Length: 223
Image (cartoon, helix red, strand yellow):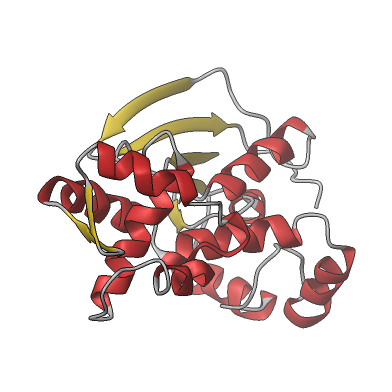
């Protein structure tokens, strides 16, 4: 059996992605000991990768809300703005956007799937960490089997969690909070490429992240 936990980006996120990004960008510029202005803030664009949006309206809305101040073209976070920005950056580090981009770029790539098969021995849409000889050796060292439990942190599209459950019979709990990874894991289940979700489904909140748990019975993954 396997269980996936989908950790959302956090209750600290705002309805406007432009505001989310601008708040994070201001913290990034300040962390580099620079003064946030309209010339320097765009330098943080790489942080957001393909998800970068236009911030033009966000300057005005955040200023009107009292989260940002502006004087002579120089912007600064207020106390309230910093309180809003810091949990955002913790919930959405640069790696969060990197993995969103990664999963979107590789999801339908036949070339990348073949690359994974040739380099790692199996296609889990992975980008390193271990080849199949190392994975199978890990199973032996851990003596995995029915009744054992495995925690897969950062399950991606769930292909690895499926493989562990199918091959060893262990119960796998897999956790991720990258939206594209979660969506792909759900799509794999609906398409029959992963064990089907059971009727057990619940939602809860813990800290600033929203979680959802879905369990499915062990079966052939079809990979």
